[in-house]
Image (tube, rainbow, N blue to C red; front, side, top):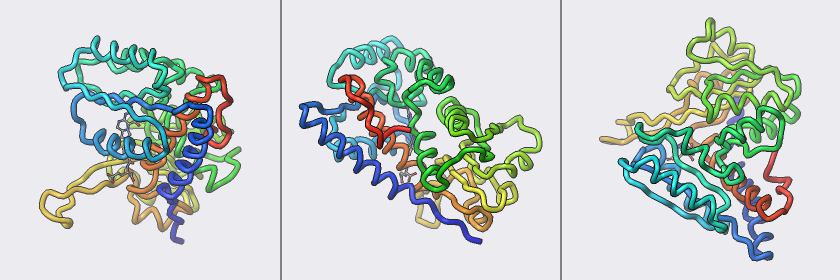
Length: 299
Ligand SMILES: Nc1nc(=O)c2c([nH]1)NC[C@@H]1CN(c3ccc(C(=O)N[C@@H](CCC(=O)O)C(=O)O)cc3)C=[N+]21
């Protein structure tokens, strides 16, 4: 068996088209959705993301506001910027790029964002709303993963889902979303005993560890659907001196002989994350104007 490759790039293009249609509809009401991105210091992973995101925000007809602050920015200065963005009526979504420098308390900054503008879904209010089944801003990466799973599998009810990784930005919200879809959800992590046996239960496996080649083929149940969230930059001397490339957390070449479907890296979860960020921004914009959230952009 050779797995179907889930084309996240193409799917993300469809979502961006829906976003653009909603943006056009809002423009007729003189409303332009706006997304503010705050970057502190220079993290290479964030650079890729911000570059793609700015372009796609504007391509969808939305306003994009970028704020770059130095590595040594004080926590208070960042919080003040967040407060200004909270108060700015042109800004419907605020994203503070993580990781932040060590001297800044990430939770404090994230929780300073107006939950209604928290398009990353990282504010404790949104995490709590998701966990308790209330309408919430859903974190973009897990949202993108869920959209791909639903598209591939239809109803997820009763399925065995295994999430590898327990971060606040992917693992935990992914588990909450899958639970909400009536999956039987197992979350495993660095302290999990017999992790191979645990992962082998999964009809759905979401790998979000941040370690290349972490998931070998013999952990994967035959016929599983595998979502690879990892974005690991590695040296690629075959491409030339000093070149790099991206790989996921899953041993793709081996796993594709066992799985029914798998997302590639690049071209899988990454583009979906950005598309969902745009979708969340449109949703936040609609809600802030007392309009219903677009059905085709939310779960
Ligand atoms: N507050 C916050 N929210 C985030 O969502 C967030 C963040 N901080 N910090 C950094 C990480 C990283 N991240 C990526 C998203 C998409 C791609 C992406 O589109 N990747 C392409 C490849 C791009 C290329 O080829 O260079 C792909 O996988 O196909 C990459 C990285 C979001 N992050």
